[in-house]
Amino acid sequence: MNSSRSTPRVRLMALAVVACIILVALTERPTFSGFASGLVGFLGFVLVAIAALGRFWTSLFIAGRKDATLVLAGPYAACRHPLYLLSLIGMLGLGLATRSVVLLLALVGIAALLHVGAMRAEDALLERAHGDAARRYRDQVPALMPDWSRCSVPESMEIQPRVVWKAVLDAGSLLLALALMQAAHLLQHAGAIAPWWRLP
Image 1 (cartoon, rainbow, N blue to C red):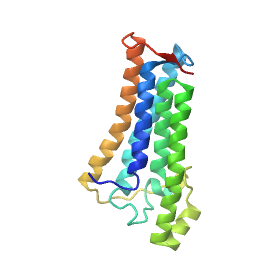
Image 2: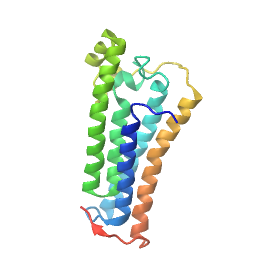
Image 3: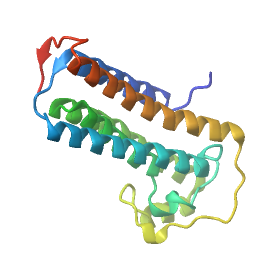
Image 4: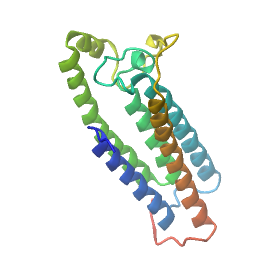
């Protein structure tokens, strides 16, 4: 299996998500209960769905061309790091699905720390590879907060089947994490798993 510069970051984020799923199963989290719990869980689902679908769409523009080409179309016209923005939205959604303020802050905090360094490294790499064009891109396009008025989608582009499959797996992993989070929550509330301790 091929690894890239992002592999350690992806593994750390996956480890954090798995730890949160285990903690959801083993802890009582009374901060959100009743209607508030359902509302927070639904909002978490909506954010994870947006992140999964957004990452799928965004990957079609960049995968197979990353670093070799300065991608300026689609979501990359609106912001320089749409995949990282969508990852943060996904972690916010998963954090809400935990129904714990502590786990929410942990997931979003870990994701933010990992992605800030990655964004700086990618900007520097693109500048070394593409010079003035990358500097103009950096100066004109926001890093994370999209300017949708700049978004442009080409009429057609070449897509490789392996790129689509990788994007499907990426989106699916977010949805699977949410499903496991919800399953852990439901199993605990059904009495199948007894909580070990209380977590805000």
